[in-house]
Image (cartoon, rainbow, N blue to C red; front, side, top):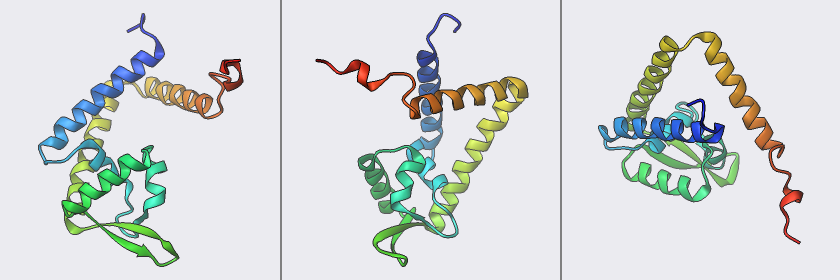
Length: 151
């Protein structure tokens, strides 16, 4: 992997993780996106639908489709937000809590397996590099948008 670009390594690694989680999720007739949503919803107080997208890094259209499927499968229910009449809170059903426990188990198994095979020092470097990349992207330090405007 030393001859590969950083973005290539990130992408191929994420695609492998995504495939692995989707293969696991398919055994429970679901998807990784649904599992991620289950883990992102507060199991006690529910979560405003408007905060789920940013929390999960999903576009509104994809999130709406995922939430619709989750509601059809009986994993979630939507209730009006008592603090904001225009908003909706997403709550897990009992079935949703059960599936959330499966998703959490899979994520913890993945994390523990990686930790058992990667030194804590190497893992800290991984987290640091990921943080630097995210901050640089957020602060538009990779590509200065003005440089690429066609005249």
